[in-house]
Structure formats: C-alpha cells, structure tokens
Length: 458
Image (cartoon, rainbow, N blue to C red):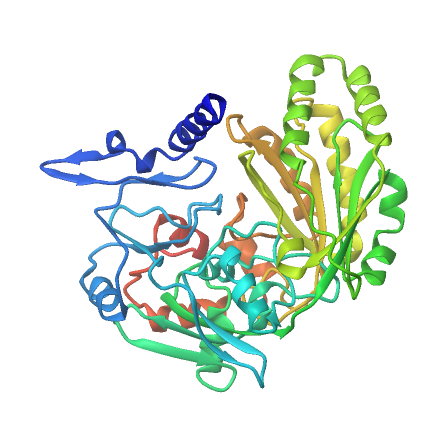
C-alpha cells in the first residue's frame, strides 16, 4: 500500500512537472491580473494569452470572438509541434464543445462537438454500431485540431480523418455561424477541411462512418532492406501497413492490421515507451561506439518473435505515446518512400549518432481538400523524432532537404521550415485557399505570427 501511494505521488508530480500551466506557481503576473500560460505537449511552444477562455455555449463563443482585439486561436490538446496556437491575445478551449451530438443510422453518420478528443469517439460510435474508417496512432487530439492539421493514420486505401467529413459548422471572424458541406458552401468546405484554424473556430463536425468491425494486428521484425523492397506490396495486401526503422540497426518493426471475424483476444499492454527509453539508455552509454551499439540492437531485436491479437477497431489503432519528443513528418509520393528512408538512414549513421528514436513510415490515400498534404496524391509519410529535452534543429535541418528533393509536403502540425513561396508550388489550390481566407477573415483575426509568415502576409 505504501508503494502504491508513493507511485501515485510520483505520477502526480511527473504530471505537473510536464504541465506547469496547471500549477498556481505558473501563473504570470500582469498588474493585478493573473494569466495562465499555455504550452504544447513537448514543451516546445508556449504563450501567455491576454484572455484564456473555455466558452460554455455558442453564444459565449460568438461574443468572445466578436470582442477579441488581437489574434484568436483555438487550442486543442497541444499535440502540434509548430506554432499554430500561440497568441498574446485570445486563446480558446473547445472542451465544452464535445461529445456525441447526433446519429444517423441509415446514412452511417455521426455528429460530434469539435472539441471531442479522438479517444472519446470510438466507444460511443461502437455502441451505436458505427466506426471510423481509420484513426491516427495517437488519440489525444481533438477532432478540430486533427482536421485543421491534416492528421492521418495509415493505409493505402484509407484517407486521412478530414476525408470523411461530410459537414462542419464554424464561427467566422464576424461572429456568424457557417455550415459547410459539399452541397452548402462547397468551396469553403474544401478549404475548411484542412485550414490550420485560419478560417474560423469549428463547433460541430459530421463524419461519414461505416459499420463497426474488429481488427487483427500482426507485428514482426524484418531486415530493413527486405521490408523496403516489399513495402508497396505489403501496403496493397493489407488494410494498414507501417514500420519503424531502428537507427543503428539493420532491422525494422513492421505492423499490419486487417479486418477479422475471429474472437477478441484483447490487446496486451504497449511496451513501446519502455523500448524507446532502452534505446536512449544504449545511446547514452554507447553512442561513441556505434559498431557495438548496432550489434547489441540487432541481437536484441532479432530475438523478438511475432505478435498477433484481435480487438475492436478503436482499441487497435492508437498507441500510448508517453515519452515526449519533437517531430518532423513529410508526406511524399508513395513510390519514393523507400529511397527517402534509405537517405535518412545514411544521414543518421554518418552525422547524427545522437539519434535513437525509430523512423516511422506510413501510407495514406489521396483526397481533395485544398490544403491536405494528400491533395490529389497517394502518399507515404516519413517521420523523424528527437527527445523533447534535446536540440532537434541540427538533425531536422539535415533531413528536411531530403524531403524537398522528392516534392514532400510537410505535416501542418509538425516541424518544418517551408514558407509561402515553396508551399504555393506544392499546393495547386494555394491561392484559392488564400482567397477564401481573405473573404472570411479580411482583418486577419485568426492569424498569429506563424500563420502570417506561412501565408506570406504582412
């Protein structure tokens, strides 16, 4: 009992150390007013807004937006690594705009509050006999945040989350409530499905779903080169396919999922977090001796067997990511993925012995949202990570040009250095998006410094 209480105390202490915005000592004094700081999950981004509010209803949200003098930004769960949220004026939480609002069993559609977290979507849908077509591997994001940044899962035949939007409601800079779909305000709908939060504040979203289902997850270890040679085939043959290449080894951990009618076995606890910390420990002790480090990793990984288990879809897709990091992810033409992974491996082995986080590879189907990284292009996604306490800049600076050489489009919520000139070349409907944005928000109420730079605006 004493041990349990001690562990609880340590867990609470760790939480507040990682999230100082919840502590009274973290309040910033400004005259007699106390302002609560905000920071993202990794701690990279932060701000001290003049107003921080969680409106109770639509009327309060409208009043807040109309009264705002400076940049208005909505904060989801803080899982973006780019400066999309920071503002010195008005920061809005949509936590009261959450939950399942309505169901259409005939059309297999469901409407949720835009502030609903992905982790709270699966169970109510499953109880109603519905399911998302796909999910990302982290389920902490809000729906609004996931749509705004083009968040995706994996699967050559599966689209990103926003590709299943059928309708959305948002409050514009003028305080008007706007409903958009393919039939109602269709051009705004094409812009708003992935908007970086620059068109308005989402309040409700309606998703096209499917009948609920079970998935079998199969994981195994395979030499990286063998896996790269058949990545396209594995992507075609399975509902989902992804792999993680382990730096300074010859091996990768691959995972597929497929629908099944087999009985549920239950999902075992994730051990990914422990594995990452073990790789960090090995780096710390043997970073100077790469040959021994590689031999030890290869021997450890080769000893891992295959794993299979069956559970409901919403319990299979997401992983628990407890070890914090900063991330760069680019979306590339699907066919160039293996060459990009090889090039990143070479950069790591030649210049960056400090890297220990695995390199992630996934597929996503093309869609037609204007600022979707998957616009009119079947894509693969390659992501690199650095531990949150370590400087990511040198490593990311060496990796990013590899993506540029293959017409990569950055994940909007993950670190990149592209500006308006380069982005306008990558997105055929870039100017159309800017025109819609200027029409809806001529005064730039929803633009912070990052978005102005990104869009090339003064």
